[in-house]
Image 1 (cartoon, rainbow, N blue to C red):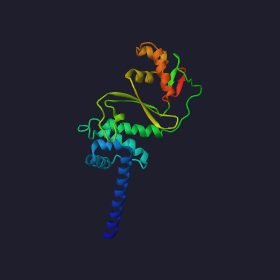
Image 2: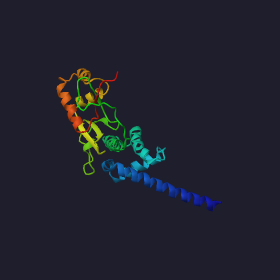
Image 3: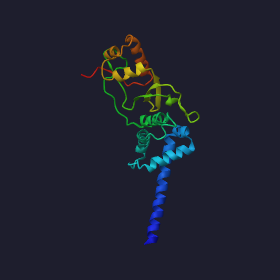
Image 4: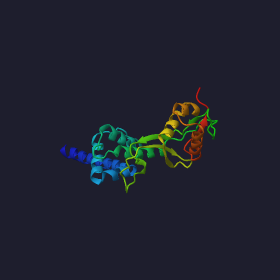
Length: 219
């Protein structure tokens, strides 16, 4: 009986080690800049603490990636010594989600040019985010983000490649409000200096494949 129990324990330990290695490999693949920011010893501790927290409740690897960032956010792990940790990890998650978001067909009748009475249409994969530091410029070689507040538009181009554009705070606000109301009303509510410059900007974003198009406001 004891011998059988020991064999079971040995096999269970082998399984646990294999599962841990799989999770670590997964996180290292999709969070290379986060790992570089922490450095090897702290990264090992981070992954170990994440696994030990029993926060992995899904059999699907694709769900572990957002789960890891959620764990960083809710537990506050590493926030004091690495204040930019969550932003760096979130941006790497953002790239993962935008690239792999299911394809969707946009509404018919979209216009290719914005007009005062139109509203903005975004791809379902597109995200508007704000960070206290320039997380999108962090690299493995230079993983510490510059302490500069940024507004970003993350999207897929027509080839499905991840793209990101820096926006002003006013442009970001226009993109948010302009999805629900007419551009004319959004510009007035945001106290923008005239609508013509905003329309030129939106046309440029459309030409750069960041916007799906424009359509009449919802009734």
